[in-house]
Length: 312
Image (tube, rainbow, N blue to C red; front, side):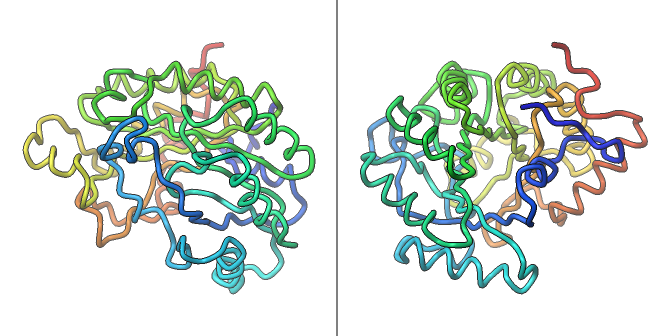
């Protein structure tokens, strides 16, 4: 499905896509269902991705010791003071949320969908942790609910993926996304901009490559060094491997990326925010909405738009 960028906006915002899907305001509620990752338990590798500390992802209410229903109720209470009239998407965010037997997965997802205010699920996972049986199940589920599968791509460069210990290559991500979208399931992707050894041109090539994929939305993240990760140790020992952008530099990088991005791929976020107690660098002191305002102002100054340099 194609979406049209509003003339008043410089890029296709994922919120626009949600507004076209629902008549009410939609809010995601993060859920930690207690999954692990094949890159941690020895199935694919040990130690996890070098940049990853999952403690930075989850809100306070989001604990695997609580039931799915309890996390949803507490999530609704958390957001309800802002907007009372809204509906919710259950967001399975922490670790690899398709990494279990399909019977257990179905029970977890369907417990979330039983809540009267939950209208769909968003599932964060790895491209090497889906199969035909699971995707067929999601396809059936998507006939009744909003279903999006979010894949961690992180980079389209295989050397980078090996360096950060991802445990899969880019071809694996391409296949998973195409297999998902071919079933009519909404697909999302995550990319980290500024991983070690990646140049400006390499980062822009990510935009060119993912623009060929049938993605619904993308989340961009600036590289953040967080405590308790192998990458933080690497930075201490080899700072020359890294280019930690200033906020101003990253704004221009993000716009360069957005210019090359397929205008049918909605942008859900442009930066991420690790908790201050975990973050080593870069420390910009900007909230997501503040950064977006700066990007939009810079796009006006540059007289540019989402997809202005996209080539079919």
